[in-house]
Amino acid sequence: MRDEGTDNRLGAYLRARRELVTPEQAGIPPGRNRRVPGLRREEVALLAGISPDYYLRLERGRDRNPSPQVLESLARVLRLDDVERTYLLDLAAPRPKAPRRRRPEQVPPRAHQLLAHLQIPAFVEGRAFDVLASNAMAVALSPRLRPGRNRLRSFFLDPEERAFHHDWEKAAAGFVAALRTTIGDDVDDPRFVELVGELALSSQRFRTLWARHDVRALDGGTTTVHHPVVGDLRLHRDKLPLDDLILVVYYPDKGDDSDEKLRLLAALSPAGPGVTAPDTTARTTDKP
Image (tube, rainbow, N blue to C red; front, side):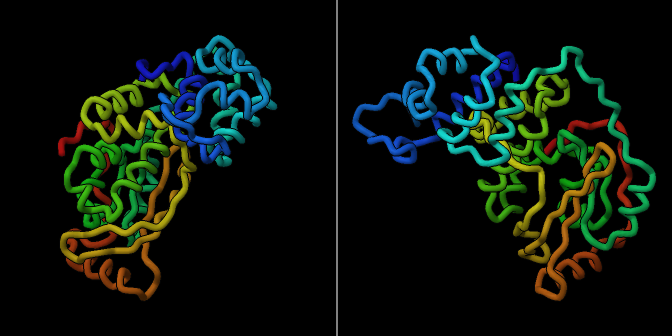
């Protein structure tokens, strides 16, 4: 991640977001022969009520302590939502001098017991979307949810993921934005550096989305997936905190077509719906 300017994350974010706002969105006549995507620096400065020179210093990292008032004005001009606005404010906040040491990601024993009792697809993931534990229903839904796999790596490098997601492009954008939110200010964390570096080298789509600097809330939602055996499934996805990890569950509306298909999938699963897949404490490099 060093090549995107980890020492000037505020400037990189401002530049990326500026390029995504069209002149029409900002109320500026588009004109002709515009050489930059989105807004020019001087246009952002004018709309935010600051000098062009000061905005240039912000983008180039020469001034890293803008006031909250300036940041709020920039958030308005750049059309940031609440999550993006909070991210912008955090970028300008002082970073701790000493790097934080995180404990190794280990699934507590009670989580394995919980997974074994759940009759719906469920798994535990770490901060970098490593699958640390899963139940048989999760593996029956997607073999990429086995412990030891990395969901982000599978998503961009495994061709079967494109067929699995009905709207792969939308899901891809949300996944990368969630990764950037998860990273926060841990830009030097070796696991994140390794993962982002590998995906940036291997996937053009990941590189494009990563350059947008999108962020999004780490919440659930509803998705439609295509299972090769039972067909389309419309599933709700919830993410529940589990110490420093996340428990992810997928479930359908009670009594609808997807509910019936999920029951069929459980019946077809050789291990049965409640058997916990073996946990791997050490991360493995999954191969598509």
